[in-house]
Image (tube, rainbow, N blue to C red):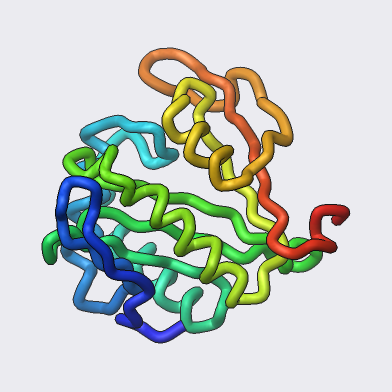
Length: 189
């Protein structure tokens, strides 16, 4: 996929201007700041503990751009009113899982409940299909009903729950595994 390619533009439910596009090298600072904010929020994502150093984030960012270039990943950056506000990705599996994409997404707290996350999921599904993926999977914290509702509304089905799989806020919560077939024949994979 092409760096900087605009995938979708729209107005959020609150009237904010939203742009989804593929990242460019110039997005690094916004991505790093966003990652640091998410760590401090301690939200429903795997990234937790201490914020990544600039070096750690640069390594991850460069690898992400490389995976996009090699068609191993879809990665959509979210900009709200011109500012970096989140991202979503579908990473292609390897070997016998090369037809499967694993989704992940995050959005700045200030822009949740505006329909942006739902639109981001729809864009990721469309881009994953364009990449030739046949099945999408994702994981969600069991205690995140808002996200689970969105995923199920978009057609994801629960495969199961792994009890106490995620360390979260001085305890453990279950990890819900979900999937979405992207082709008619992939429903039987």
